[in-house]
Length: 88
Length: 361
Image (tube, rainbow over all chains, first blue to last red; front, side, top):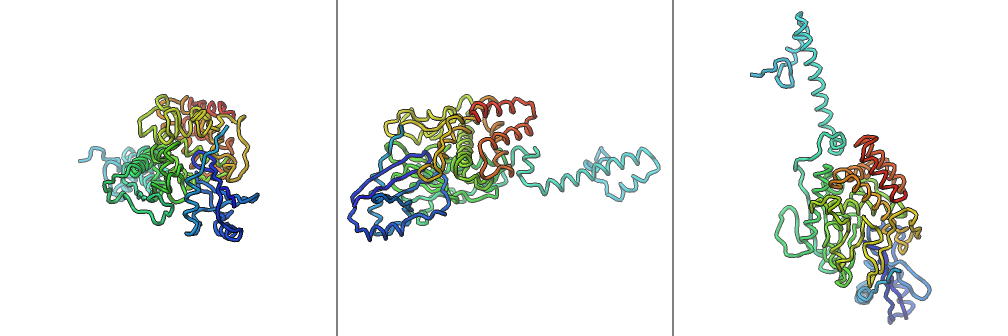
């Protein structure tokens, strides 16, 4: 299954994106998203980065601090593969 | 022996004696005693008032401009060891023991943190982020290759940079001053982090960040290049932001493209108030009030913190500055404060007005 991780925000607002094929079932992915989705009422971190996970046509703001141990290696790899989207 | 026998300020006369002198049949002695009694009343009441006044009130009243170093900065620096668990970070340095460290990032944030604390204390008698001596906590080596620095409401956190576009976010004092100022703003106006108020929040951080660097390097308005993060961004042609020329901090960068900041209100970017919209472009539209400050400070001349900085600080700490303030609200307050501090028709007021006019606010 293809997923897309988007990073926005930061000291200068740079957008970074990575797409990857992951070996997860729909059930596993839904469970993961339920765990890591960020709270809409979370305070806004000044100059903080924000992440969004896109699966198919559905995008969810996520908090990578909440990633369970079994998925940490996956997200570590995704983060290291993020590429900057150049501004026009 | 005291030479001034009739002035209790300089010569101690017991109150009962002064009362007797006031009742003297010799009019000259009675008049002098009444005068002394009045001065004594003023003296003790003034002393009582100023004993109760806060440091901030004393500074506003011009009683103190530079505070003797009675208060000491409290700071701790932690090493995250490239992990993202802040609670697991290891204490690298603290101001109590002031131990020697080898970490460059650690040394950078100690230097920047001290420069920021000194700036607020020595110029505005502000004791740390909350003006109550808050322990400054700084976390370095956060995450692997993180190209960012942030203030999370309690502490400052710095990444090492990706090594390609960015180096360590501890490399520039202005970035450290920027993050610490987010804490100051949170304790004062607490500006909303969205739309124009959010852009003002960012602008105050940039303005105080650049002044902290200028003061550390003893740069006046002409000597400074007004660039934020010039070492953080790899390549001599690039910086994170420019207050002198918003939109020109980086041009045609191979990875980033061109700095998106506008300098004037007619170029304001109406972005969505979402994560991906940078909460209405808080890091983008901050270029407008940044430019207004640059023009005002440059036209005043000398060191930016001496005049323009004083005006902007008194606005940031003004309780009438609303959390959802717009650029025009800050413009009006800077004019009011410039008039109060320097006089209605002063060159400083003209410089402030000129700054906002140039930024088309």
